Length: 126
Image 1 (tube, rainbow, N blue to C red):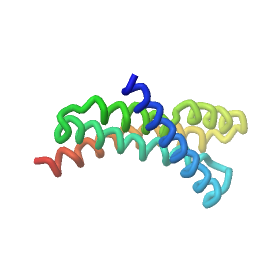
Image 2 (tube, rainbow, N blue to C red):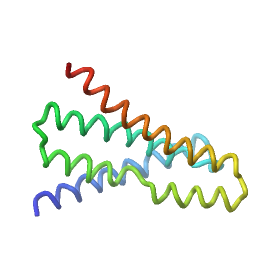
Image 3 (cartoon, rainbow, N blue to C red):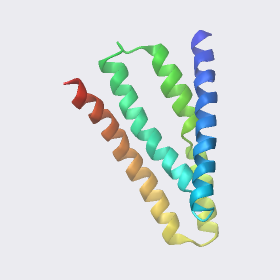
C-alpha cells in the first residue's frame, strides 16, 4: 500500500508539472502545434533514462524511488495518450507534414533522449 501511495503522490506531481509545461508552451508558441506535449515526452524520456541509471548505479535499485519517480512522476508527466490524440487532430486537419514531423520527432527524439539520459548518468558514474 505504501508503494501505491508513493505512485499516486508522484503521479499527482507529474500531472501538475505536465499541465504547467503544456500551458506555458501554448502561451509561448501558440496552439498551432503541440510543442508542450512534444517537449514533455522528450524531456520525460531523458529523465527516465537518467533516473533508471541513477537508481541502478547509485541508489541500490531502490523500488521506492523507482515507484515514486518513474512510475509515479514520469507516468503522470509524460503522455502518449495526449500525443496520439494530438496526432489524430493534425491528421484530421490534413496537416500531414506536421503530423509526420510530430510522430517521427516524438518517437525518435524520445528514444534518443532515453539513451542520452542513461548514458549521462553512466558517464558521471565511471
